[in-house]
Image 1 (cartoon, rainbow, N blue to C red):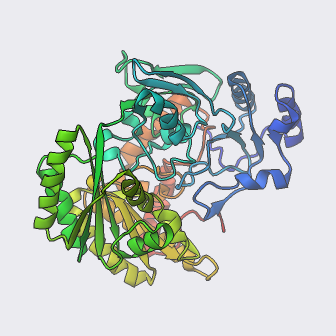
Image 2: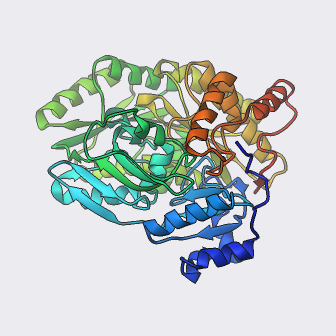
Image 3: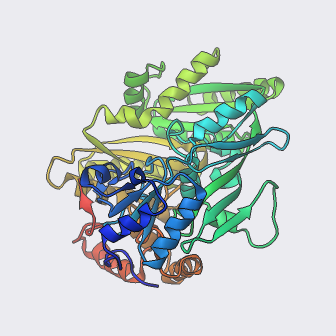
Length: 494
């Protein structure tokens, strides 16, 4: 496989622009510096690259022609959706084409009888549920950025959300995709049914971070809107009791629709921003949502209330109406921007651990926070152990971003050490590529590269992301022992 991250294109930019203009409108090819600048990063803004070219096609046929042209001249391609990713997965390349799918924002079909929707990759996550609501249906995965993030990006990163404990991640709710390989071949994986013959390549494509193909259509599963949804808020005077309550609820056979946890810094930030009525003096807070029939929810609310009290909750509150329920969730979903109001910058991590390790890991993060002299606000999907520590820092202070990166890497390595993984829903991108060396041995990394080569022999699709080379891991191993270098030395920093 050719290394494409730093090689020069086989065609100069002016000639490539002329070739693209043969089938794309003039306004669909961006090459001036001021036009390229808005695409230099995704939601992980600590790393930035100016792309070589940006293209904004409007039809599937145009995408196919772009792919074939780039394949002919061996030009790398990075697909980009809404740009809300948090791992640098859509970071452009100085020698490559950034393929924006923003104009593919149409819902192609909603089939209420079969409870499915066919959508283009640029459709916003929330827009699917809004369109399906008139049929009494909705799309379950709901990332905090669902008002803006696109379904194509959700598939690429296998996005989650606050309701994924009960209803699963994107991979559990996507039935089919259509995508172009690097040489312009259209492939169709899965479809409108719940199973298909052959290997489960659909699951392989979900979470592949744009490294295998460019998705141009997605078929998703829709669910009936529950008859009733009820949320409980529980305050605790220490994090360990809150963690024990999470385990107790699951152990009692209850699978909430959502089970979220926030520590005191996150509670205070969200309350100041949204005014959701959160207990600002609590050390930790749980939000537990139960849904189903009226009878089922009534019984489970009493059961969960009893468990929370037995686990030492200092306060247990139930939303009295839909407006209060919406406010409670609004605070949680606005936690990231809320923290942004109290710190010049923050670095959002994404690791997953066994639920039984919650108290230990949170305690260790607190210790490391003191060691690195960097505050942390913890927000996470407690039910499935998906942590989102938000490390607060100031990029204008020399060395603080580098110290923050190192701290974040240590958190991810802690997740691996207790039996977890380095990402739950944000993907690896460039952010966690070194920690892939910690999680996977060389034989497994070689298999990942073999899968990549089967789809993309020249390594032109999103090169340098998600799966590290063995030489990179060898270098990271040396760094890891001696503590000399910083991750991602080749990337520009903000």
